[in-house]
Length: 310
Image (cartoon, rainbow, N blue to C red; front, side):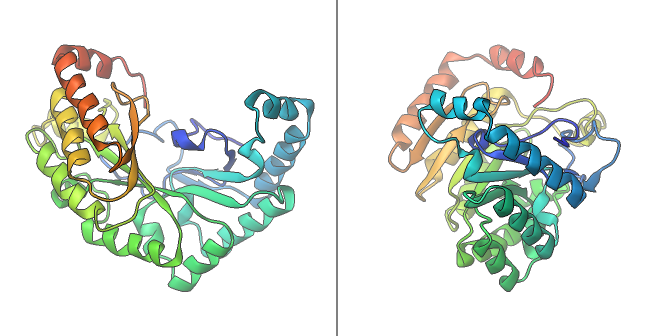
């Protein structure tokens, strides 16, 4: 398979067929991000020949005794034949026709594949017309993972995300209109020291006007090769403490009123949890309160500092 560098995928795409169609991120400017610093280039689109070769290899593996054994061990058909996840920082940036070509290739090699997921930036959605979004929906694109990070306008501007809360609202409503579901990634700590609770409150206010299938939270972890690290060294930004980050997550859960799943499943989270809102809100709040009481700032800092990468 033509995989380039570290391959990132959401936890809930563990059983999907991972197919590289881009490498790196087309934006590559967010101050906190180091995910693609190991690449010799910021962004690259995979040649169709590489994609075809990878699909051929995946098809062969799925039909081997190893693939059949996977189904037996799981006790159910493996989703590799039903869902594909396109890897890279934001493959949804590709032109509509290119994405449709990839969907047609997937159907050729995996006829049972019914849905296609991908990471997407808000600006990737705005670059497509309503007609194109409808075409992509009909081609199977669904369950986009969008790193909105926050609804805090000041934080989005400082971190150089390239869009604000208004764009998040407008573009996700366009996805709602055509029926493309989406997941939000929320970055706890992005508002800075002393501002996390307020950032969570305005984020919840924004998210409550939309229909994310899930809101997943990651804890901000700052690495020396990030632009944000240099901002901290220059005295332009102060990192929040770990206890404050947990209180921020608690505020977000408490103020969300929409039906959605809420999860902290990635390695950046010292405390992992998952639940459905609003049904399991009280349980989630209880678990967060217990974590805040149980783990000291020193314990949480020790966890944060031992992370070699996200």
